[in-house]
Image (cartoon, rainbow, N blue to C red):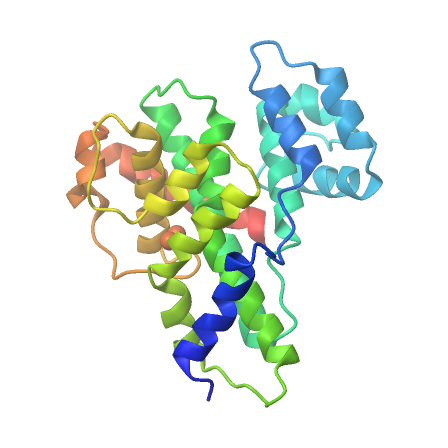
Length: 281
Ligand SMILES: [Fe+2]
Ligand SMILES: [Fe+2]
């Protein structure tokens, strides 16, 4: 069995040396997100950006036709997706399809945890976005969605590294599932996530959300962070993805009170989250 401290050293190395072996977020998705947050987004540009990548186009159309989004008739073109779903929704879909491919591992057990982490990340993105809309928070919704999607990116980094270590280490290395979960769910994932997003040059707000999403010290004016924290807790309660902590009723959380939500809101959020599973099947 691999010793925990020597394993942590191996995990830290690429972050400390600056050689992070996890590619940055898709440049196309970032460009689309930036365009979609504008007051009058250029839909031609968004369409062009998507269509310049055939694989991306196919994935976006597949997701736009999933049972989560599907309307009365099939969406056959990117233009059709933009018209029917809107630029914001297309921007979110682009983020999801470009991120999804990273949540994969060669090792079977780690791959399963990657899958759960992906479900959790999408669930948190949808929940955080939904909460912000509900309270009329005026931040562009896809920014909140993006923050939710990335909040546990430190875990993605750790699982990716563990998978590589497991494959390349000279001695056969065995990590039990419990060992991996303990390591990945520990506070280190917030440190690694922060460093990773800084390295990718993402705006400071995303870095801070990744760093502080488990913080119990709340700033009542930081609605963006509290929405992600409550979204995270909602996923945790419904066992969507890697469970970080024992469940607690959302109505007993400080975020619920500070955001001025109601019990009915929380019931609606649970329904929304149950639907989100359709996106990650
Ligand atoms: Fe977390
Ligand atoms: Fe989380």
